[in-house]
Length: 498
Ligand code: NAD
Image 1 (cartoon, helix red, strand yellow):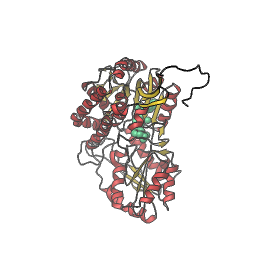
Image 2 (image 1 turned 120 degrees about the horizontal axis):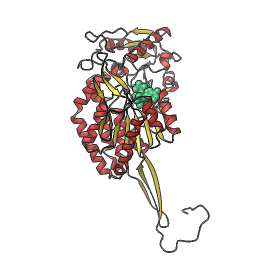
Image 3 (image 1 turned 180 degrees about the vertical axis):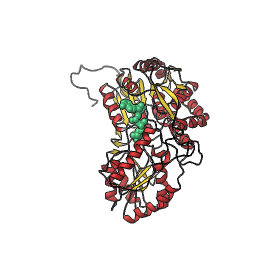
Image 4 (image 1 turned 45 degrees about the vertical axis):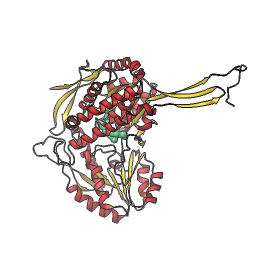
């Protein structure tokens, strides 16, 4: 059976833990490979390689670092089909969606190509007599990224593209469920001219994560995953003196006002709720129609759309979505559906029990639709992360806005309306980090910044955009004095520029 190795100091390394994890093909339900699970020593080796590479890489001028990023971008584009197919074979999302996963990561690589401009400091001439003040953004050292299964190309690139362009070296610990694409990305980075040790990949579970969080040489940790783990990573990493940004789970709402273009809203929401089998942190699993007439019209149109959805294998070009990532995740989603029924919500469409002919053991699950879901139900309060759309009815816009505002998660939210004033007030007021107005999945472009609020993010800087550059650099401010003539008396009071 194929084994998936770590990538340390520019080479594939099997590791010496003797522990392996199963990597499944979600289409067939069969184990297709074994991934090495790192020991603490394996992580230490990766960190040592990154630390060795840091002095030369951080001293490489920013144009040269950008040139490696340009070459990397071209290579990833050249290998797009291979990467997308590999990604789909381990994740289960359809190949077209995997291409999007790679492309959204490449967008951040493109952003990172602008590092000579992005990392410029500031300068004040004449802050006092003969005094100038300037600041520079220096890389923090060895950075680490810990990533989830659902975007195995995009999320690693969010992190390492910006970190490395800033002059840091990097240790990536991707999800052990779909680990192959991150290794290919590291190989392509080397082929693009990245020196050995600048980008390392270690696979693993909690052992590897804890080794990263406690390693004194690692200065910054970026995490994306579920909220309880995000909180653990944040508190453990910061307790060990690191800067940490940790993005967590989500439960995004889409509010539909009576004046919305209903056809457009339904088409948008069906894609946002069921695309990638709902395994997106910016999926839209909760629809909040305002008024019963809106709700009834929404349900009628949405039911038609759902009945036309095609679930298929990840290689089926006509499939809207493929299998979920694992048998355990499929069982978890089905349990939530059962729980929703027991909690008193109306299950209008039941996606359980879907059998894919020829792929009977695959992790397929059909689309489900619930009506009359309410806060306080566990199935509403928690993230399901599957192809399940829940409808929460509201009487007024104020009531509708209160749902995402009061929810424990605050990643994304969308409003569907033709009323600009309502949209403007909504965007200003709602207690959520990323807002879409007639946009169902408001993932910001790479030169803005990605991050939620409340239990969707721990730490105070976001991914990519200028915030990403801030996270991966530390600022140093220099005050220099080149006085003309006499330098004046000794001063025992705090100097002022008066
Ligand atoms: P996960 O939390 O299970 O795993 C994320 C990472 O943490 C993986 O690398 C995993 O190996 C590691 N990990 C798992 N258990 C651990 C433990 N006990 N101790 C230390 N490390 C551990 O998440 P997942 O299932 O891979 O991904 C889905 C989750 O990620 C969802 O909750 C989704 O909303 C969230 N997500 C959030 C964003 C965002 O930007 N907010 C983006 C994508 C996914």
